[in-house]
Length: 315
Length: 269
Image (cartoon, each protein chain N blue to C red):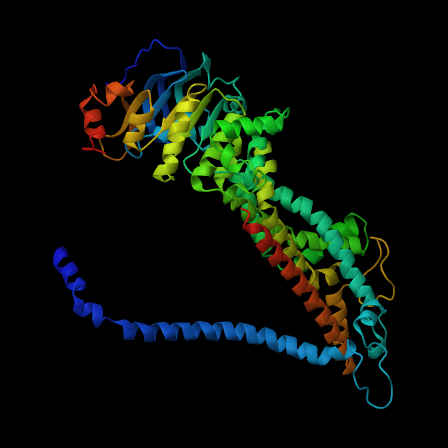
């Protein structure tokens, strides 16, 4: 049977009148479907960006024609970033919220990086493969999916009340740290996992101890991936509103937070607050805030991509 | 069981293996190995895939410790010391017994750093530049890379990478080098270079090499061990066993066992 069928397939007839045309239609249909999927995703983003830009750009560009009556106070990015909030939409800047977000990010980076990478290195390289480790791994994956509001409650109970940090930017930063820690740990573990085992074996075969092999060969190779995971975690934290509101971040702040124990607000909270006002002008101010947030996100994600491309070919 | 035999050699031996078996969980990879490895000679391990050669060679520097569930029974003594004694530190074992792997595995760093890493972890930080040059020269790589010591090692060709791995192994001055199919990823020209290199290195080091290449074993080794797999009675498990261990010249001309003769003449395996 077999030789016969092989012979049949090898004949020139099948070679010429094969199913090429039929396959081509199927393939182009399938490709078309894929294009549609991509287009929907891109269009959504474009619509959002267009909507926000067209509304909010008035607060960020000075060539805006102001009706006939009053001149808008805030009409360029620097003023917008440095001015305090106001009860008049055209005088409201995002200064305190921007400063609050910067404070939050600094705290998140300094706490998450050591704890996140430390936990990942331990779990991936040193932890014994037993039930407890598997239990921890399962919980990490679950934690990464817990709704962010829950972390707000946790932050309120632990940092605000128990630790006595109050409704401060420190409590906020630590709450966001808890939120992104599982994500950062999982990403860092993936980065470590991607380091070929032959590197570990090569180091050990030279008489390196486990510690030397991990910290002088494996971790340096995984750093780009770890940093990428960290940046992506940060860009999740920067957009979070719910946990911060839950743990008691302020909504109207008319000063710049100057110590970790200052009260604070953050960009997404500020935007949420502005959107809530009935006057149409607030929508413009809120959109300007969103533009700022999107800009920050774009910068951070570009940074992650840059780091990945810059260092991944060295491995 | 009938393969249990030890070839007595007059030369000084570096390893004595007796009744060695290695298992992973329930699976016995290789069992009943008895052999003496002679100092400053090249000993080749040959045999079909899955016969436990690589498993066996990894017991000589305790690389098997890294595999979950691997268990070694029997004894391997290295210069009279039982390698699996509780008091023996595997890190110290690996400092004395180097290993070169199947696939070249240079660190993703510069050529120089590949060598200095081993020196640093072994506290051999005096005259580092001299040591780097000596190791690369011994590995027949110095002339090719002396001007690009700061180049990333991954930019080297496969054969150069493997010689770099040999260089970093000998840089830490071991007295035995284990090679697990060092040429299987290399082309014939690069293979020839490694084989020539082995003849140079054996003056100073004892070399154990696992190879699939029969010609390589016959060309380069002084002693040769032939392993094969035995299937259990119920046909479910395959266990590696040592069939014959002899001087290479004897084994490739007048082997004791028929199985060996069949394998090296290509009629089996």
